[in-house]
Length: 121
Image 1: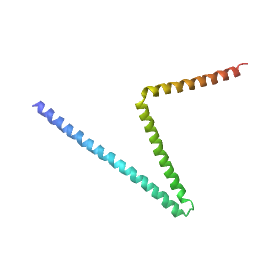
Image 2 (image 1 turned 180 degrees about the vertical axis):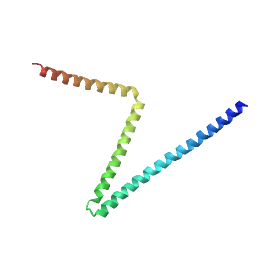
Image 3 (image 1 turned 90 degrees about the vertical axis):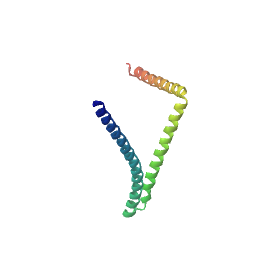
Image 4 (image 1 turned 180 degrees about the horizontal axis):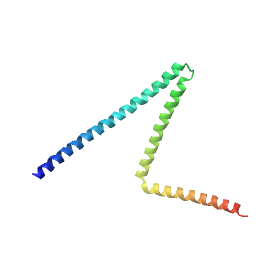
């Protein structure tokens, strides 16, 4: 008898988890759509504010916003490409990071050592 109760509760829990997954997926897709619409609305608001204020350079803000977005997208692409290269050649990446760190440490140590000798009386 108790096994049937546990089985029913387990089935109910599984159903609740499945419905939560669907709701989270719906929220995620809604957020993606919302952010796309929000970006478009911001562009339109910037254009309308410039036109309403009668400024000559109302397109400057829209251009700046567009350049910022394109720079952000380009930066994300560079980071993704770099991550792919690190995954493709992990040993080379580790050796390059070690070498670069060694060079920076040597330069820093030499600079600190040089400052210490100048401070001495």
